[in-house]
Amino acid sequence: MKCVSNWIGKSVYGIISLSLGVISLTMMVTAIWGIWISTHEKTLFIKALLDAIGLIVIGMAVFDVSKFLLEEEVFHSGGTKSPEK
Image 1: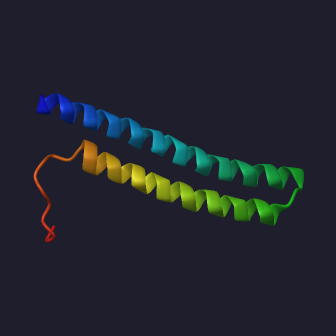
Image 2 (image 1 turned 45 degrees about the horizontal axis):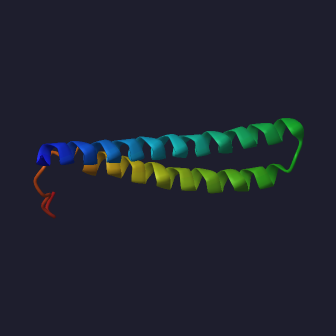
């Protein structure tokens, strides 16, 4: 029964992690697309850059959380880590 519970938990964490990764990459691509569009349409370029900075920083943070969940909750090999590692 514990094996099934572990498999379900890892599956849920895996799906959440992959979803967060896709969302964060989409945010970063949207930021780059916004800059590209603003250069070709002569719109407010500075505003597009500032919006892109916000999206990229948040996207990087979300991607880091996604990576952490994937490494620690899905690919964790068992046992505890010592503070010395």
